[in-house]
Length: 370
Image (tube, rainbow, N blue to C red):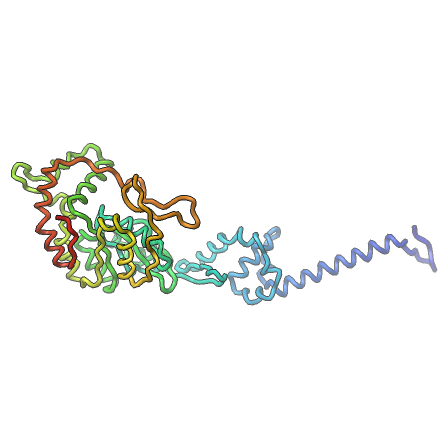
């Protein structure tokens, strides 16, 4: 109810209460708006209607307003919303800086990485164990490696170094960029091209008994082209006379001493590390320890990272902390080899023996393939 006093209507107590509450709410909203303008910067004014508050503050934290935002408890406590939009905001940053990557360390501070040309390359050999070496060394926190084979120095050299660099993963200071393309080892132009890029590039060659390697190579090709001739037909120019066809790539790749001569015209042996494909299966931690030493890395990849998979016949990485399954190489790895006539195998051993001996002498290692 209301009553008249001195010619004006006086509202009842309930109407007075509502008006006071309305004024209080309006004042509080205005205060909140001013607070947001002061501490969240000018960018909030550009935010479209309905734009989530937590996303706005996350984006601001990655930009120039970061110092102001550190003062604001509101923007610092965006909670799960910032996490929801984190990847999108990071993507926006990378569009502005295509050769930089923003990472966050354990204490939450941001770190910026860059795409660099590789400091180390696994240059060979095909069916020697290069994929295993690449996957094993990628476990190391100071190594970032390209997962696919870029074939830059043998197939795409005309695209230029900037194209090559754009393929590389982003690394932080102190991390090593790596790639692997096994066909480099048998490409005549590859050593000179890599030397022209960086003469201090470290090279890794994974070698394997050339007879076993040739059979593995043929087995892989047969799985893709079942119509090809038999191994025996392809391996010989004249089987009756025992003349091996060294022009067949499966045979020629295993003449390691021949290909190595080409590399030694540009790189000293001290910049080339040879991994034994056989020892990589028997003692993966030991072989990877030598690889880490060669790269100047602390030995972090050790026995605790491996277990032997009896089905595949080679070691796999144990289950990572962020995965529910172990990491083994693909289905094409550990494929059962085709059966080869023992006489053919003996003839191939005789063919490779002088090349193997020369290879042992040059590199200073006996791989015991005879």
